[in-house]
Length: 402
Length: 227
Image 1 (cartoon, one colour):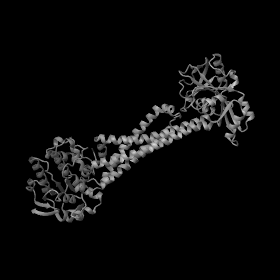
Image 2 (tube, one colour):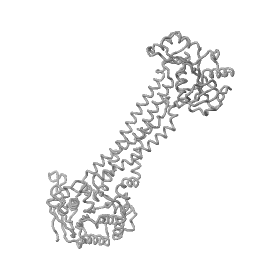
Image 3 (cartoon, chains in turn green, orange):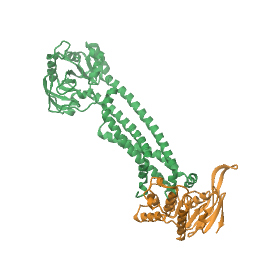
Image 4 (cartoon, helix red, strand yellow):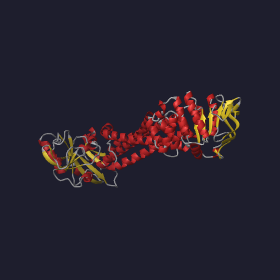
């Protein structure tokens, strides 16, 4: 040891059991604060991603798909699946329903086993002329419009841009990969209406898909609608359900809301959990510091005898606490990140809500706040017991201990 | 250095004989000048350690003053008093007084590192003191590896480190054998002869042989036993 300034560090190193116990408490504080905040933010990101991905006010699907609930599985979770209805639904809505600003069809197809993929892959076709849902998302990643025979793939599809893949024996060209959504949509393949029609034809030829007895050119899977600002979305939804036969119009927000509700429940639960863990950890930390400092009373008295001021003594206790909580909080943050990265997918699968980690800058900011909060908590709890110890008369301690 | 206590008392809260407090030290005048080795004897609980702590600036007196070369110890704020104690008054507390996370050498050097850094000169002085007190082989040992006697000698070496003007030693030979008792007392005597004011609290009759003055303390009252 070179000077008294090194004493806090030496104390921590030479009393490993004591240090590790307090370090674990700091890790708990950091994991609950950082991990909890990150979980809530990731869930919120997932929902935002879903909402922007959907981009529609109303979704119209075949009536059977609505009653079976399969539309939610395909549209929101992106699970492989398909359903079809007559393509004239588009015209019927345009003619009979007032208040529609935009509408665009989508086509779903499930590959048996793509050349690229070891699992069934969802193929989603859209009309670039009218689409307002997939195109903005694709433009962010690809920057251009998809040509015939081109596909763009979800973030987890294991192919590279420029690869040719075979779907129903049709060769298509992969021109790009989309940003992650945290849902099964990341495993889907997207193409324009001409390409999907070609694939649907090929699937029919191979007798892999039945379009309710219709020609592939005569069917669509869903219609996405944007409602004019001066119209009520609920009214337009009801109008479609009343006037268009064999379909079910669903307000998009209501689809998201069930997911949002579960998110809000999870967020509240995480919030309560963080508060409880912090409260308990702070109490345990305060008691630990108090007990440790009581046990070290004689040591502090010796330092006082040798000329340490009360301030110097408090500074030693304070710096020990800061070093421990700093190390503990950094450890807790790394642990949270590791858990987040390893178990994000399992988490998504377990709660049915997409889990998207925030941007690096946000993670760093949350990490910095966590380190500061944990160090502050440690410093405050240590300060209380340090103040108590340093206020005691050295003579009284020596008298009591000797 | 001259240490002068004037009309000092110390009372502690405790229920006794219908009162809420008791006097550990009744009104006392005491003076200790440089070059003098004074010894206080007396029964346990008589107030000897209380007087030593009051003289060392470690225990606020209930009344009276303690001056070191005209500096009133208890008129200083804690920061100044602590720094003053570090430079001028060495207290050897009763019992074990080691910092258990530091080696023997680091413990001995601790007073010099409070307001400065470890220097080669200080390290050399620590080495000399350890050799003199027979603990040089233990320089890198931890206090937990030392016997009671070795810990006492370490505390004495530490007190000598800053060559203070005043040494207040509470039972410095408590755990020592005859040989080491003689070494420690001789060292304290030499320190007094070199100009320091030395106060020793002891039950050990051997100590009296080295004393210039002997006091007795019982029931919180100090009397001159032998001058």
